[in-house]
Length: 275
Image 1 (cartoon, rainbow, N blue to C red):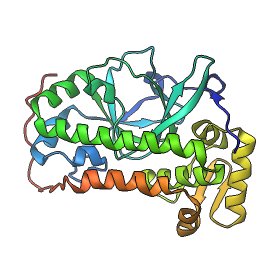
Image 2: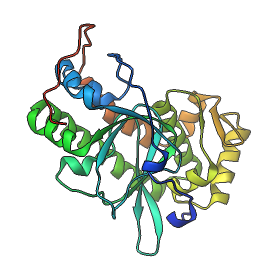
Image 3: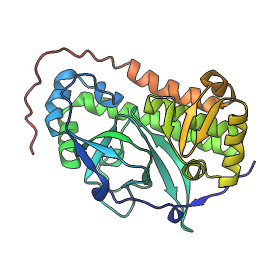
Image 4: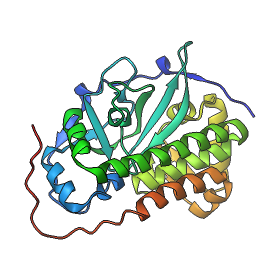
């Protein structure tokens, strides 16, 4: 099995602040981010006035080891990639993050910067929250702390499964895993993604990724055209994917199944957090 580290510098990247487009927040109780939805409804609405809903663009850098994390992000759709940098400028996939989690977990543990570079792989919407507000909310809420601790365990499970997957599984299996996880997070069978970024996240040559995707397309499992991916046969793709897709998904499902949320239609609680 062929594996190759892909250099981060070869990917054009977009600074966070220049391409962060705030959009009006919808006052709804149907929260799409599973971590936020696991909070007690009173705590959610206490935090909600501080939410800023933003569009995250592909290749946008959300965190890097050199820059302090001034915001945390709770994706509602889209996919972010955690790329572990090497001294020679190459990078390897650490994990991917979507609506099951958050960007900025080091802030929860008191670290001002990330240990990896986090880049948006598939564009989408996210809730952005100032790091200072996030830290204050966590300090006041034992429930929030518990949810974040359990999310950390689920993310660690994904990281170790990803490491094992990239070591022993074939490129087509790994590609199927990543596409299925992306489909779950985006909430659609069709989403924009490039071969270049898939190759980077999977740490393989672009030619190897193209061959693997071609096999999946020839089998009628996917359709890829002009940067648009569509999953045509999900059941067939799950048969190709390695067991890591199922095991990672089950890990997150166990986390959130243990934190059911009920969302009453009443008015929001007032915020008492500092601005």
